[in-house]
Image (cartoon, rainbow, N blue to C red):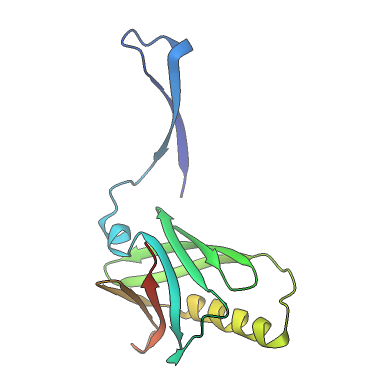
Length: 145
């Protein structure tokens, strides 16, 4: 995604002294990205296993073609490519701070692996479902906002 910064005058005469900096996205009308479910989500199931409330794994889709969130130990970001219901998360980066336990580190790795394996999605009411290439739900997220 390429971001363009442009100056938009706020005064009727266009005086640069009164200009505001506006962030412009190259593709602000991507309907597939809007369908992905902009907002805040928390993982409720991972590979069919219900997750407890002890560790919060989140996903935030507030910018076009970018998601971010928490693995429960570290923050992450990823690039999102969507065409119809097809989904690809790439360039997944995360901080590499040590998790407090080996179990938390394994849970973090499983969540990141699930995100990387996501091939399609579905939004139903307040749920975002990520599917693998075989059509199995690998992550079930619930809307926070």
